[in-house]
Length: 68
Figure (spheres, rainbow, N blue to C red):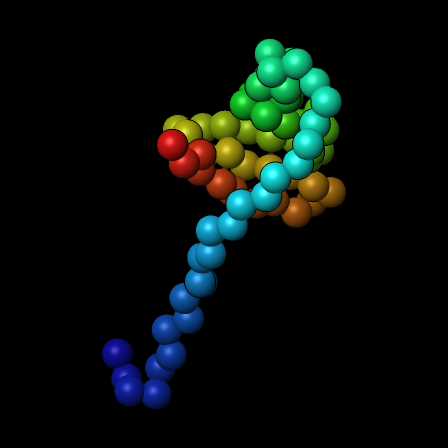
């Protein structure tokens, strides 16, 4: 690699958000833990493959992995 070449890296930052939601835990868990639940309120479509969630919004997409 030449000295004048730059390597661009994406900086990842972990953040945490808290929201108060009035719902039973059973119903809420389904909305936040399944592809069909997430696509019902969060994105136009959500797919899960090999633990990677792909979120689609009007032609744009983002990928995420669930951390445990």
